Image (spheres, rainbow, N blue to C red):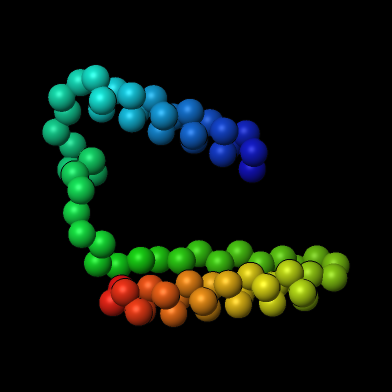
Length: 72
């Protein structure tokens, strides 16, 4: 996953630089109010991952509660 992640960061950085220099009217660059949020929770399935999975799920539940408190 690291090579993909590094390439993605590089691509996004280059796009951001072009948006700063050029006057491009792209719908994805406009600031809009947040209406919906999607969370992707990834847990492990090998070895002794029960404690890890438990922590990840609890953090996800806390984040869901925070987002609901914000009305999202």
